[in-house]
Figure 1: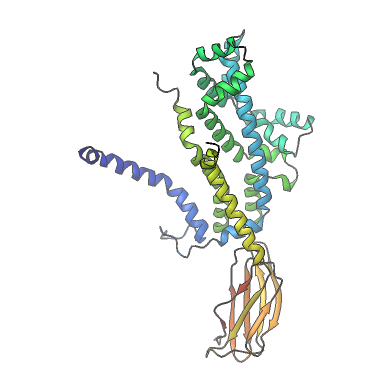
Figure 2: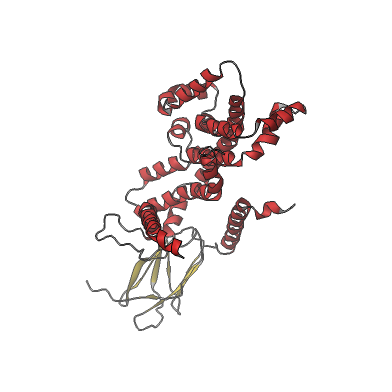
Length: 271
Length: 126
């Protein structure tokens, strides 16, 4: 009882700061339900005459379901490829081989190059491969990320070497060691990889804008910009669209947040 | 142990979403005949026969008349086969008054709409 009373000012301050951080999200949700002008004064904190009909407007104003399917397909391809490719790269970086230090330095230096700088060569390669205006073409540049490779590397290095050596002595091949022995022990790293790659692919705008030619192949961020260009001054419908785009990413994060936090903090403490 | 995957939060969440989507689509399939039915009454509550009722569509992209009919002896009117989610109704009869245009937002295109409240014609002062 005494301990709880001692900590209430801290909890109160944290709750207040959290509420302040959530105000923009609450405002977007409130406006999507009421459609009130964001410049109205005085601003009302509580929604008046809330209704879900702006969401219905968005559903029928643009091919929302088609854009949703496109985003889901591309995101699934990106997530699966990320987990598979990053795990293999992370495992390779835990082994000793000639040029390992140079490879790690190369990866780290590539992290400093923004994607916008490489967009022209990426487009030319995608065009040569005849992957423009396709799901694979949209997913290709996002199929591996260096940050996630290092997350896997850190998670694999935390596994005792004796376990891996014992499997090797038993004649287990490397790919089985990785997928049947090591991967099941690194669920936080997998969850982190899934969440990060899903959010990056779901919110990706520039690359799909460059690659997509057909209106029916657009993803949700492109659909949002198309919605803005077609319809003006539609605060309620615009915010409803924003909520509909945000919800899947939020849902994935909420479902996997425990493993995500564990994956990010697994190397923070020793022993 | 064998069915432990059913207890997984991903399975429960996405399974619930799937079930809700199926239930919603089944509901839509039973209620999407595009029917709009209602009654027109005067300010005294008496049904108004021969009133002109106009159905129009006004959405983010469209502003167009979709139908016109007149009320029967009981003041009833009916539209069928609409494909709108934001229908507007306007009723008028010379010498009696006018109603609307007023919006009746729907949850999906072609939803059946049986008006619980009649459309009351009121005299408009110019």
